[in-house]
Amino acid sequence: MNLLITGGCGFIGSNFVRYWLESHPRDRIVVYDKLTYAGRRENLHDLWDSPRLSLVQADIADMDAARRACCENQIDLIVNFAAETHVDQSILGPLIFTDTNVRGTHVLLEVARELGIRMHHISTDEVYGHIPDGHQSVETDPLAPRSPYAASKAAADQLVQAYYITYSLPVTITRGANNVGPFQYPEKVVPLFATNAVLGEALPVYGDGLQMRDYAHVYDHCTGIETVLLRGEIGQVYNVGTGREMTNLEMVNIVLETLGQDRSLIQHVTDRPGHDRRYSMNVDKLRALSWEPKYDPWQAVTEATRWYAQNRAWWEPIRNGEFREYYDRQYAERLAGTRKA
Ligand code: NAD
Ligand code: TYD
Image 1 (cartoon, rainbow, N blue to C red):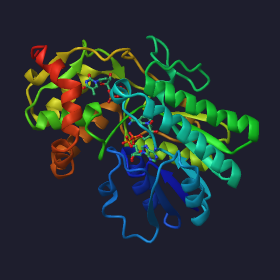
Image 2 (image 1 turned 30 degrees about the vertical axis):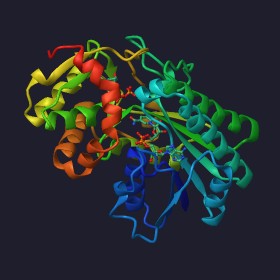
Image 3 (image 1 turned 45 degrees about the horizontal axis):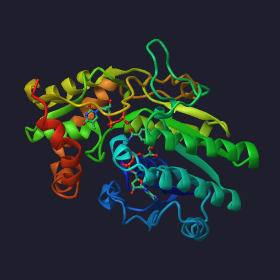
Image 4 (image 1 turned 90 degrees about the vertical axis):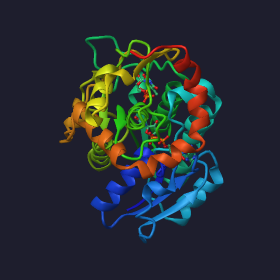
């Protein structure tokens, strides 16, 4: 099979490419990636020599480029990881989220429709919005996104489902929980906190830190997507997570303990506007396809933290580069205005 993996140089996409090439030795992968700040060729540095892997640098919203990549490579399946992905970035500059996440997904659906290709779309638990205690989101729940990022992902999900209903396009969707693991850009909380802690810098916890997230290992997300690609029902949505949550303060404590660092690094700062208090998903539908996560959230955060401690060569150039400007914009005032715990 020939797969077009959009966003394959990003965090989850690159982990998925690595996983798929290893476990499906007859398949070929074309990574289709715009290489934004979050897309890094070096995430797959040891694999580019493989005759089974190639890169097209282009935008998913560019219909001609997407069509050409599919035709020239006889693509059988598009897996759409490409997106703008960070909630805080979506608060600072939201329009690119609509361009890529909504229009880009729509363009891929059009290309898939024209060429008769199956498309799998990668979505997120954030489309369900804040989940009150006592409930776990199921796939049929109404979408109630609350950030520009989540709203753009929800719009994309609805377009994907509309193409199934209207054109019978063979589509599937997975909604992932908060992923952690190797090669995650350090704007996201676990790599941010792990790398800050390694450097002895403050960990900026938004508000009281009692928000709840299902921190799932990216490996389990990859096997969940694989399960849906091989055994999922066309037209269906599947949640992928551990089904268990922890508070952000619990997550911070695991990061600090794993690194042998002191809790005095914790600094409570001004909260994110519209911050969703709790995400929680029921993953029984995926379990019914004989899938089980290998890591619980505690193991996932520990493993991920260890990777950042052992791979400074990957993240130091990022942190010393353009990331610095974003970090100052997002955190300088917040950190100056508060005291350490
Ligand atoms: P990421 O930000 O690490 O990577 C995104 C990738 O998409 C990068 O390689 C980037 O260059 C590429 N990209 C961005 N805009 C593009 C465009 N217009 N055209 C082509 N390529 C483009 O993201 P991630 O964390 O790996 O997330 C991958 C997918 O999984 C996204 O769809 C995201 O919404 C979803 N998701 C992420 C998480 C999470 O915890 N990170 C959880 C659930 C779902
Ligand atoms: P993040 O990794 O941005 O994922 P999402 O917002 O998509 O869940 O954040 C995870 C949690 O960590 C979320 O509750 C916000 C919180 N957080 C902080 O407390 N401080 C930070 O600096 C960041 C980036 C996030």
